[in-house]
View 1: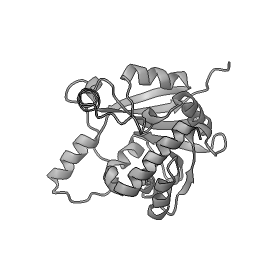
View 2: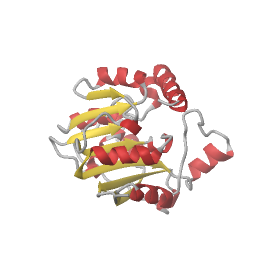
View 3: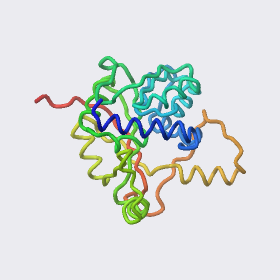
Length: 238
């Protein structure tokens, strides 16, 4: 790893060692990503920047084969206890330790904006997907009110953890330039999920069952984060 990547990894190590699962959303926030990907039993999933393994745990409930990688050794140590069925690795997304075409699906939730070399990371993610592989990413919106107020105007942007954002057009252009076709764009679902959770009195729900997909009340471009569903296509040769 480069010196900057080592700094980012150290920040995440400290964060996970201190906050643990409190740093992340609860597990019920994660099955929606598998639902939007139309994940099927027996398919092979790679979760890039898997953190503590919450999405991988949700995948096991659907009999999806889970593999995860994260730059944080502290995260992987916790994830190994939380999802013992998963193949978990400490590693760098810019050099994924997997064969070409190893996975049917790939997820990268809330992490792509933190990568130091996004083009190289996406090339690796493209490489390890099958020719018809699907990918789901959740990324920060630079035009969202939350980002502008909290991160920019109030100075709360996390530079140590390399937190960043782009507009929808910028994310789409980046992903398409690296060999992905955008199949769908959605707002982050967590706000509506929290509301439904409140309305049912915080009772747990069946995580194997589909849930409603929320649409924005106003413009999608005001969403705090975007969920993009993508399909691999062949990248043009140089």
